[in-house]
Image 1 (cartoon, helix red, strand yellow):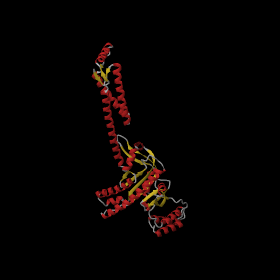
Image 2: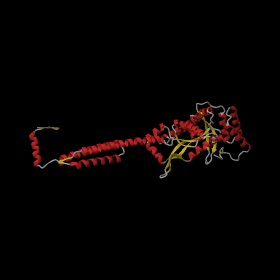
Image 3: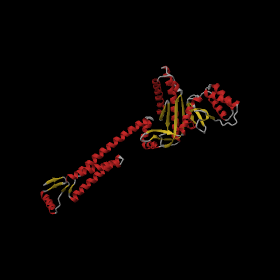
Image 4: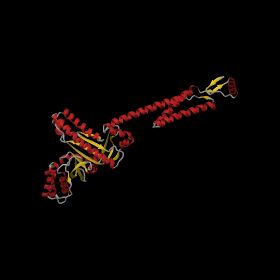
Length: 413
C-alpha cells in the first residue's frame, strides 16, 4: 500500500489505476520549461498592469490575490480535464512578488511626495494648517488650477525703511530685517494664516485662500485671525524696538492694512521651458488691502481695516472710526477703522466724543463736529487722527463745500 494526502491506497488499487490509464491512453503531460518562463513573464506583466491601472492600494492587492486564485483554479482544471501538469507556483510567485514590490514602491513614493508637499506648504503657512491641507489634497490641487475665493488679505510695511537702511551697513540691515520678518511671520502662523510673499520689507499674508468651505462662519474666523495677527505684530514690534534700542539700533514703525473680499487664488506664472510659478492671489481686493496699508501713515495709525473686516470683528475688538475715503485707483469710497485692541481692553477717554464728532463731520455739521473733536482731545484723545479732523473742520467751515458726501479723496498712494 501507499499513503497519499487523501488517505491510504493499496497496491491493487494502484495497479488498477495504472492499467485503466494505460488502456484509456490517459497520461500526464509535462508543460516543460516554457510553461514556467511564460508564467513568470505573465505574472510580472499582470502585476504591472494592475498596479498601473488601479490607483487604490487595497483594491489592487485584492485583485492580485483574486488573479492568483483564478490561475490556481485554471491549473487544477488543466490537470483534471486535459492531464497537463501545469504548476501555478511560478505565476503566483511572480504575480505576488512583483505586485507587492510595486505597491511598496508606490507607497514610498506617495510618502515622499507628501513630505515634499508638506515642505512646500510649510514655506507659506503654519504646520497646523499644512496638516489640514494635506488631509484634503484634492481641494488644494484644485486651488493650484485657479479658483475664486473670499480671502482676507493683510499687508504690513516698515515706515521709512529706505532712509533707515542708508544709515546702516548691508549686514546690519539684513540682520535687523530678518529679525523683524521672523517675528512678523510667527504672528501670522500663530493665527493660522499663510505668508504669500515678501516684498522687500513688506509682508503679504492671507487667510481663507486655501479654505475649501466658503461661508460667513469661515469669513468671520479669517477676519478675526487676521486682526489678531496684526495686533500680535504690533506687540511683537514693541518688544523688538526695546531690544534694538538697547543694542543702539534704529527702531521700526509699521503700517498694516487688512481687507476681505473675492480674489482669484491659483498657481500663477510662466510655463515651460521658462517655468516660474507662484501660488498667490490676484484681484481688486488685494489692491485695496495694499492701499489701506499705504494710507496708515497719512492718518497716523498703525492698523487700518475695511468695513468688510470691521463687520466681522466689531463684537470682539475695540475699533475706532478713521475715515470714509476714496483711495487711489478706486471709485467706490471705503469706510475705514483702526483697532485699539481686544474688546476687554480699557475704553479710552474721549472715544465716545470722537465717534460723535465723526458722525457729525460726515453729515456736514462741521461746527458740531469740531466741538466734539475738541472734547475728545481735552479728554485725552489728542492724537494725529483727532487733530486731522479738527483741521478739516476748520478748513470746511472757512470754505463750505457746495456738495458734501463725507468722502475724502486720496490724491496719492
